[in-house]
Image 1 (cartoon, rainbow, N blue to C red):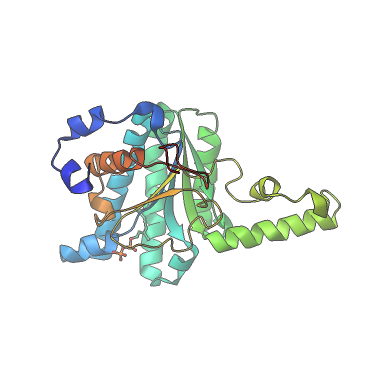
Image 2 (cartoon, helix red, strand yellow; image 1 turned 30 degrees about the vertical axis):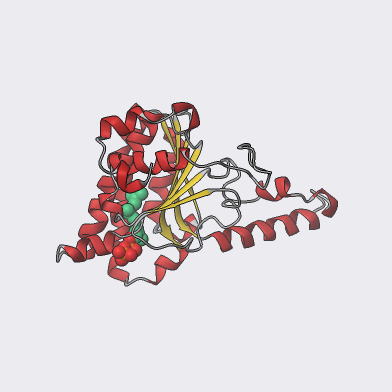
Length: 258
Ligand code: FPP
Protein backbone atom coordinates (compact mmCIF):
# COMPACT_ATOMS: atom_id res chain seq x y z
CA UNK A 1 0.00 0.00 0.00
CA UNK A 2 1.30 3.47 -0.89
CA UNK A 3 1.97 6.14 1.72
CA UNK A 4 -0.89 8.35 0.46
CA UNK A 5 -3.33 5.43 0.94
CA UNK A 6 -1.96 4.64 4.40
CA UNK A 7 -2.54 8.28 5.37
CA UNK A 8 -6.30 7.70 4.93
CA UNK A 9 -6.33 4.96 7.58
CA UNK A 10 -6.83 5.57 11.31
CA UNK A 11 -3.98 5.26 13.78
CA UNK A 12 -5.70 2.19 15.25
CA UNK A 13 -5.88 0.44 11.87
CA UNK A 14 -2.26 1.32 11.10
CA UNK A 15 -1.19 -0.08 14.47
CA UNK A 16 -3.09 -3.31 13.84
CA UNK A 17 -1.12 -3.79 10.61
CA UNK A 18 2.29 -3.58 12.27
CA UNK A 19 4.12 -6.90 12.49
CA UNK A 20 5.76 -6.68 15.92
CA UNK A 21 8.24 -9.43 14.94
CA UNK A 22 9.54 -7.32 12.03
CA UNK A 23 10.28 -4.03 13.74
CA UNK A 24 13.63 -2.36 13.08
CA UNK A 25 15.92 -3.32 15.94
CA UNK A 26 17.67 0.03 15.62
CA UNK A 27 15.86 3.07 14.28
CA UNK A 28 17.76 6.29 13.65
CA UNK A 29 16.07 9.63 12.97
CA UNK A 30 17.29 12.91 11.48
CA UNK A 31 14.83 15.32 13.07
CA UNK A 32 14.65 18.15 10.56
CA UNK A 33 12.27 21.03 9.94
CA UNK A 34 11.82 22.71 13.33
CA UNK A 35 12.77 26.11 11.91
CA UNK A 36 10.38 25.81 8.95
CA UNK A 37 7.57 24.65 11.27
CA UNK A 38 8.05 27.87 13.27
CA UNK A 39 8.43 30.11 10.18
CA UNK A 40 5.13 28.80 8.75
CA UNK A 41 3.46 30.08 11.92
CA UNK A 42 5.41 33.38 12.04
CA UNK A 43 7.03 32.20 15.27
CA UNK A 44 10.69 32.41 16.32
CA UNK A 45 12.79 29.33 15.47
CA UNK A 46 13.01 28.36 19.14
CA UNK A 47 9.24 27.71 19.12
CA UNK A 48 9.90 25.05 16.48
CA UNK A 49 12.60 23.45 18.63
CA UNK A 50 10.24 23.44 21.63
CA UNK A 51 7.54 21.70 19.62
CA UNK A 52 10.29 19.39 18.31
CA UNK A 53 10.93 18.29 21.88
CA UNK A 54 7.27 17.49 22.28
CA UNK A 55 7.57 15.23 19.20
CA UNK A 56 10.71 13.67 20.71
CA UNK A 57 8.74 12.74 23.85
CA UNK A 58 5.87 11.25 21.85
CA UNK A 59 8.12 9.21 19.54
CA UNK A 60 10.42 7.95 22.32
CA UNK A 61 7.43 6.72 24.34
CA UNK A 62 5.73 5.16 21.34
CA UNK A 63 8.90 3.46 20.08
CA UNK A 64 9.40 1.88 23.49
CA UNK A 65 5.75 0.79 23.69
CA UNK A 66 6.04 -0.86 20.29
CA UNK A 67 9.18 -2.72 21.32
CA UNK A 68 11.93 -0.96 19.37
CA UNK A 69 15.19 -1.76 21.18
CA UNK A 70 17.46 1.04 19.95
CA UNK A 71 16.41 4.54 18.96
CA UNK A 72 18.97 7.17 17.93
CA UNK A 73 18.07 10.83 17.47
CA UNK A 74 20.39 13.17 15.57
CA UNK A 75 19.82 16.14 17.87
CA UNK A 76 22.82 18.38 17.14
CA UNK A 77 25.44 18.00 14.43
CA UNK A 78 29.01 19.26 14.42
CA UNK A 79 27.90 21.69 11.72
CA UNK A 80 25.11 23.05 13.97
CA UNK A 81 27.81 24.86 16.01
CA UNK A 82 27.93 27.30 13.08
CA UNK A 83 24.37 28.54 13.75
CA UNK A 84 23.88 31.96 15.38
CA UNK A 85 25.11 31.83 18.98
CA UNK A 86 21.67 32.69 20.37
CA UNK A 87 20.11 29.66 18.63
CA UNK A 88 22.96 27.39 19.80
CA UNK A 89 22.58 28.52 23.41
CA UNK A 90 18.80 28.20 23.26
CA UNK A 91 19.16 24.64 21.93
CA UNK A 92 21.65 23.79 24.69
CA UNK A 93 19.26 25.23 27.27
CA UNK A 94 16.39 23.16 25.86
CA UNK A 95 18.55 20.05 25.93
CA UNK A 96 19.37 20.68 29.59
CA UNK A 97 15.68 21.19 30.44
CA UNK A 98 14.74 18.04 28.52
CA UNK A 99 17.29 15.97 30.44
CA UNK A 100 16.17 17.35 33.82
CA UNK A 101 12.48 16.82 33.09
CA UNK A 102 12.81 13.48 31.37
CA UNK A 103 14.85 11.53 33.91
CA UNK A 104 11.76 10.43 35.85
CA UNK A 105 10.03 9.11 32.71
CA UNK A 106 13.20 7.41 31.43
CA UNK A 107 13.50 5.57 34.76
CA UNK A 108 9.79 4.64 34.87
CA UNK A 109 9.92 3.40 31.26
CA UNK A 110 13.27 1.61 31.81
CA UNK A 111 14.96 3.54 28.99
CA UNK A 112 18.75 3.75 29.01
CA UNK A 113 20.06 7.08 27.69
CA UNK A 114 23.38 7.38 25.90
CA UNK A 115 25.07 10.31 24.21
CA UNK A 116 27.46 10.02 21.29
CA UNK A 117 29.56 12.70 19.64
CA UNK A 118 32.14 15.21 20.80
CA UNK A 119 30.43 15.66 24.15
CA UNK A 120 33.34 17.67 25.55
CA UNK A 121 32.33 20.52 23.19
CA UNK A 122 28.94 20.91 24.97
CA UNK A 123 28.61 23.52 27.74
CA UNK A 124 29.97 21.97 30.96
CA UNK A 125 26.64 21.93 32.89
CA UNK A 126 24.89 20.18 29.97
CA UNK A 127 27.71 17.63 29.62
CA UNK A 128 27.58 16.99 33.39
CA UNK A 129 23.80 16.55 33.30
CA UNK A 130 24.11 14.15 30.37
CA UNK A 131 26.67 12.03 32.12
CA UNK A 132 24.53 11.93 35.29
CA UNK A 133 21.42 10.83 33.32
CA UNK A 134 23.54 8.26 31.45
CA UNK A 135 24.81 6.90 34.74
CA UNK A 136 21.38 6.80 36.42
CA UNK A 137 19.69 5.09 33.47
CA UNK A 138 22.57 2.74 32.61
CA UNK A 139 20.86 -0.39 34.01
CA UNK A 140 17.56 0.22 32.15
CA UNK A 141 16.91 -2.54 29.64
CA UNK A 142 13.69 -1.77 27.73
CA UNK A 143 15.19 0.54 25.12
CA UNK A 144 18.44 2.39 24.48
CA UNK A 145 17.85 5.99 23.48
CA UNK A 146 20.99 7.48 21.95
CA UNK A 147 21.28 11.22 21.45
CA UNK A 148 23.79 12.16 18.76
CA UNK A 149 25.08 15.52 20.00
CA UNK A 150 27.92 17.45 18.45
CA UNK A 151 28.13 14.39 16.25
CA UNK A 152 29.18 13.95 12.67
CA UNK A 153 29.78 10.76 10.70
CA UNK A 154 33.11 11.93 9.31
CA UNK A 155 34.52 12.92 12.69
CA UNK A 156 33.32 9.59 14.11
CA UNK A 157 35.39 7.82 11.42
CA UNK A 158 38.42 10.09 11.88
CA UNK A 159 38.30 9.62 15.69
CA UNK A 160 38.14 5.85 15.13
CA UNK A 161 41.10 5.89 12.70
CA UNK A 162 43.07 7.93 15.21
CA UNK A 163 42.40 5.42 17.99
CA UNK A 164 43.11 2.40 15.76
CA UNK A 165 46.50 3.93 14.81
CA UNK A 166 47.24 4.62 18.46
CA UNK A 167 46.44 1.02 19.45
CA UNK A 168 48.64 -0.29 16.61
CA UNK A 169 51.46 2.02 17.73
CA UNK A 170 51.04 0.84 21.35
CA UNK A 171 50.98 -2.78 20.05
CA UNK A 172 47.52 -3.38 21.53
CA UNK A 173 46.41 -4.70 18.13
CA UNK A 174 48.38 -5.57 15.01
CA UNK A 175 47.71 -4.18 11.54
CA UNK A 176 46.61 -7.66 10.43
CA UNK A 177 43.86 -7.69 13.08
CA UNK A 178 42.05 -4.81 11.39
CA UNK A 179 38.70 -5.89 9.96
CA UNK A 180 35.28 -4.28 9.55
CA UNK A 181 34.20 -5.76 12.88
CA UNK A 182 37.30 -4.53 14.69
CA UNK A 183 36.96 -1.06 13.13
CA UNK A 184 33.26 -0.84 14.14
CA UNK A 185 34.35 -1.28 17.72
CA UNK A 186 36.28 1.99 17.53
CA UNK A 187 33.24 4.03 16.45
CA UNK A 188 31.07 6.03 18.87
CA UNK A 189 28.33 3.47 18.11
CA UNK A 190 30.34 0.44 19.23
CA UNK A 191 27.65 -0.61 21.71
CA UNK A 192 24.69 -0.39 19.32
CA UNK A 193 23.86 -2.36 16.15
CA UNK A 194 23.81 -0.64 12.76
CA UNK A 195 20.41 0.98 12.06
CA UNK A 196 17.83 -1.07 10.16
CA UNK A 197 15.85 2.03 9.30
CA UNK A 198 16.71 5.71 9.09
CA UNK A 199 13.96 8.32 8.88
CA UNK A 200 14.56 11.92 7.81
CA UNK A 201 11.77 14.43 8.12
CA UNK A 202 11.15 17.74 6.30
CA UNK A 203 11.60 16.69 2.67
CA UNK A 204 15.40 16.93 2.52
CA UNK A 205 16.76 13.83 0.80
CA UNK A 206 20.29 13.56 2.13
CA UNK A 207 22.28 12.06 4.99
CA UNK A 208 23.95 15.32 6.14
CA UNK A 209 27.05 13.80 7.74
CA UNK A 210 25.03 11.52 10.05
CA UNK A 211 25.93 7.83 10.34
CA UNK A 212 28.19 7.35 7.30
CA UNK A 213 29.72 3.97 8.14
CA UNK A 214 26.68 2.63 9.97
CA UNK A 215 24.14 3.25 7.15
CA UNK A 216 25.73 0.73 4.73
CA UNK A 217 22.63 -1.52 4.62
CA UNK A 218 20.07 0.70 6.33
CA UNK A 219 16.67 1.25 4.73
CA UNK A 220 16.08 4.97 4.20
CA UNK A 221 12.71 6.69 4.59
CA UNK A 222 12.13 10.34 3.73
CA UNK A 223 8.96 12.25 4.50
CA UNK A 224 7.91 15.84 3.79
CA UNK A 225 6.43 16.12 7.29
CA UNK A 226 8.32 18.61 9.46
CA UNK A 227 9.76 17.11 12.67
CA UNK A 228 7.33 18.84 15.11
CA UNK A 229 4.43 17.28 13.15
CA UNK A 230 5.99 13.81 13.05
CA UNK A 231 3.75 12.01 15.52
CA UNK A 232 2.38 8.50 16.16
CA UNK A 233 0.46 8.16 12.88
CA UNK A 234 3.40 9.35 10.73
CA UNK A 235 5.63 6.99 12.67
CA UNK A 236 3.37 3.99 12.00
CA UNK A 237 3.29 4.84 8.28
CA UNK A 238 7.11 4.89 8.21
CA UNK A 239 7.25 1.52 9.97
CA UNK A 240 4.70 -0.03 7.60
CA UNK A 241 6.68 1.28 4.65
CA UNK A 242 9.81 -0.33 6.13
CA UNK A 243 7.97 -3.62 6.67
CA UNK A 244 6.93 -3.70 3.01
CA UNK A 245 10.55 -3.72 1.84
CA UNK A 246 12.71 -6.69 1.01
CA UNK A 247 16.16 -6.38 2.57
CA UNK A 248 18.71 -8.25 0.51
CA UNK A 249 22.05 -7.16 1.98
CA UNK A 250 23.65 -7.55 -1.46
CA UNK A 251 22.26 -11.08 -1.95
CA UNK A 252 19.61 -12.19 -4.47
CA UNK A 253 15.89 -11.85 -3.88
CA UNK A 254 13.97 -14.52 -1.96
CA UNK A 255 11.00 -13.73 -4.19
CA UNK A 256 12.08 -16.00 -7.07
CA UNK A 257 14.15 -13.40 -9.00
CA UNK A 258 16.29 -15.21 -11.59
C1 FPP B 1 16.55 20.57 12.75
O1 FPP B 1 15.61 21.57 12.49
C2 FPP B 1 16.64 20.34 14.15
C3 FPP B 1 17.73 20.59 14.92
C4 FPP B 1 18.98 21.16 14.43
C5 FPP B 1 17.72 20.34 16.34
C6 FPP B 1 16.88 19.19 16.76
C7 FPP B 1 16.58 19.42 18.15
C8 FPP B 1 15.44 19.15 18.77
C9 FPP B 1 14.28 18.45 18.21
C10 FPP B 1 15.29 19.58 20.18
C11 FPP B 1 16.34 19.06 21.10
C12 FPP B 1 16.44 17.61 21.10
C13 FPP B 1 16.43 16.81 22.17
C14 FPP B 1 16.65 15.37 21.99
C15 FPP B 1 16.20 17.30 23.52
P1 FPP B 1 16.14 22.88 11.78
O2 FPP B 1 16.37 23.90 12.84
O3 FPP B 1 17.34 22.58 10.94
O4 FPP B 1 14.91 23.23 10.89
P2 FPP B 1 14.92 23.95 9.47
O5 FPP B 1 15.74 23.10 8.55
O6 FPP B 1 13.47 23.98 9.10
O7 FPP B 1 15.50 25.31 9.68
